[in-house]
Each structure stands twice: as structure tokens, then as C-alpha cells.
Length: 547
Image (cartoon, rainbow, N blue to C red; front, side, top):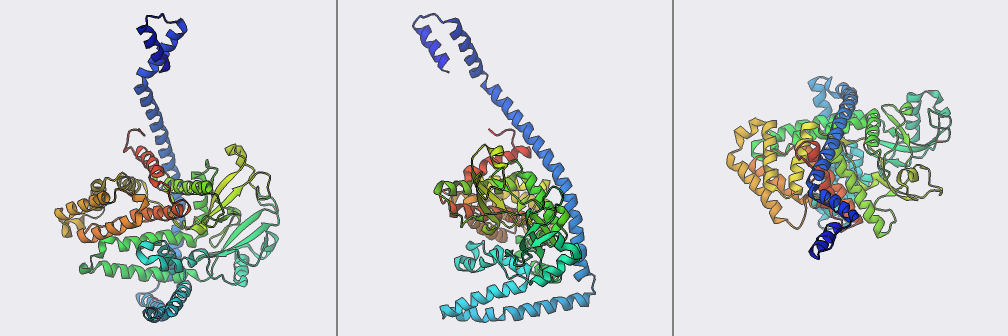
């Protein structure tokens, strides 16, 4: 452009142009007047790349789903064996026995909390006992408590604070039980393979984790390699099987009562989604596949790491993986600039999972995101590839662990999710409401024809539009909890059945947004989310270019 301006000035003053300036002028003029063609060519190139990415992701998803379906069939077969293969009378007896034991377990909480309004000490006792009772109730209740600990908008700050204790640590089982499981899975000679510490380094609702070292080389792993070995708690199967049997029955009963209007919140669908996501956690072969998928999806990102699963040393009840070091993301000592970087890395990671990969880590609480400061040449520099990949002397790495729980949607549902979340992020409330209704009609026409009028649909869309207009200072991803509460209210009022996976994906956004804002309150979520939404729209053919 400077050459063009120089030429114009010379012509105005009657000066002759040099041959060099003439050639330069033609070059810049051609570039200037053909910039639309250049932009169009770049958009076509980008669209082709996104199409290739989409095809690759579909093929990878097909292979992944085949493996997951196989693992799910094996898991459901155990569920059938534990509950459904029994007679109706036996199933009813198991359900009643379990419900009675739970009632006895939680009875003190029902007594202590009302009295707790009169005494703060009694209230504290009530919370302490309730956390203990939830832990004793088993993995299903611990998972529900972990979810509740992320929803301060529903349960309040105090409940979240108390229940958050179940996110990082639960009571471990005894070493003798671990030893019995190791012997049953690897034989009497297991001690020739592992050098185990008898004290677990962590314990969750499904399993506890030990630090171990290889005593002999396994594949490419040399002797002395540091490993994390995840050992499943004994006696989980029957508890989980009966719990879901009870939850499904209660969900069906509640949705069958028209006066409650709860069928529009997809209670049964949400329970099934929770079941489908939790059951694979009981089969560590599924988590092994999840690790492979996450490592593939983020293989080009040096700042995001997932453990490497060791297939030769993993079974349905024992998972062996590479050892990840790091500090809880909220406890990591960092400068303000580093906190901003961590917040940005975490948000980008989740947005990629939701919008580009359709494979979302379903348990992204702070304890599952460990931050490591990589410094080449230091004692903790066990990954020498860092400087080769990034060209940097050091940096921060997010180590994401506990990948047993994932949320995935499938082609059609993912496209619908991209449309709905994209509309919310762009504050197109009426469009978002219309998309939710259209998808509901495709999934379950009977509900619309029997109970929902055209006026209900219009009022629902206008209500969603009003939510967006009344909250213009905020973005959907910055106030997910507030948006969801209002959306659920409108859904019940106007009989619109919400898609459970939309709610789950929105909650994943909320959890990571909460972590990011704790690190860096001024983080602009929209600036990170919008490019991901645009890429996803191009990938699904909903947008012709990124412009």
C-alpha cells in the first residue's frame, strides 16, 4: 500500500516512476485488488482442512465406539448377572434391602440438619456425618456428591465446601485386599514385576492409586520406570447395579406423574446418561481406551498431557499407567501471568473437547488437573521432548488424570449441540430455543403433540431470548449455572424436554469456567470459545468459512 501511495503522489507532482517502483506498484496493486480471491482461497483451504479433520474424527470415533461398545457389553453382562438375571421377587428384595440400609445410614442426617438451624455446632456435626454417610453409601452416591460440589448455584457455597472433600480423597481399602486382587490378576509372581509401596497415594470412589516401579523391562519400558497403578475397590458391582435399578424405577415413577411435570427435565434420560458414563469406569479396559483417545486428540499440544496406559499390565480391575507429577491446579504457586496462562490452557482444552473432539472428560474437578513446571536439566525434567516440540526452555504443563468418565454424543447430537451452544454464545436466544424445540420434536413427537401447544413453543423461545437480552453484560459460558436454572424453569413451564447431553456439556463448561475464574477473574471466556464454535460450525458444514 505504501508503494501505491508513493506512486499516486509522484503522478500528482508530475514525476516519472522508476522501473522498480512501477514493478512494485503493479505487484501491490494486484495484491490489493485480488485480496477477495486470496481470502476466498484461504477459506477454501481452511474448509478442506476442517473437512479432513472431521472425516478423521469420524473414522477414529467409529473405531473407538466399537471398542467402547465391546467394553460396555462386558460391563452390562456383569450388571445382568448381578441384578437382572434374578427373579422379580429377588430384584425387589435387593432393592428394598438397599433402600432400607440407605435409610438407616442417612437417618442421623435427617435428624441433625433440622436441629442444626438452632445450633451451629450441631449443623457442623450434621455435615460431617453426611459426608461420612455418602462415602459409606458407595460410588454412586459419591459421584452424585462430587457433581453437587460443583453446583454452588443450586446447593449453596457451604454445601459445596463440605461436599468438595469427597472430590480429592475417600477412605482407602486395606492392603491385603489389594494384594489378593494383584495375585488374582497377575498370578503368584506379581512381585517379580512390580515394586509396590503398600500405602496408596490417593483414593477415589472407584479405586485407589499406588506408586510402583517396574522390576523388569516390559516392552519399551525399562526396569525402574515409575508407574501409577489403579486398583479397584472390592465389592462395587452389586452396590452400583442395585443403585441404578432403584434410580431408574424412581425416575420412571416421577416422570409418570403428570402433575409434577418432571418429564421435561429428562430425568430418566439423565439417569441413563449417568449410568452409561459411570459403568465403563468399573471396567478399566474402557479407561485404557479413553487415555489412548485423549492422547491422540491432544498429541500436538505440548502443554496438555494425559497418562500413557500400559496395556500389558492392565485388566478390568487394575489399570497401570505412566506416573504424572504435579500440583492441584488451584494450589499451584504461580505468578499472575502464569495463572492467566493456566486459565487459558484449561478453557481451550475443554472447548476443544466439547466442540472439536466430541470426547469430554466428565470429571474435571481441580484434583484431576495437576500442574507441572517443566525445567530442562532439573530433577523433575523427566520429559526431554519438551524443548524439541516447543522450542522453549521451560513452561507449564497440565497433566489430566482419572479419565474413566467421559461424555460423547455422536454425529447428530454433536451437530445439534454446536448449534445450540453456538446460538447462546452469540446471544441468539430465540434461535437457541427454536433449535431445542426442533430437536425435541425429532426425538419425541408424542410429548409435543399431546401436551405442548404452539403458544408454549413460542413462549419458550421468547423466554430464552429474554434471558439473553436481560444478561447482555455476561456471556453464556461465563454464567452457565444461572442460564441453566432459568432454562430448566422454562422447560418445565412450557413442557419442552431438555436434552440430557446438552446439560452435561454445559456443566463441563461451567466447571472449567469456575476453575479458570478462580485463577484469573478477568479471563474473557468468549474470546476463547467463539473460535472453537466457528471451527465446529465449519466442521459440520454449518458455516462456509471462518470469516
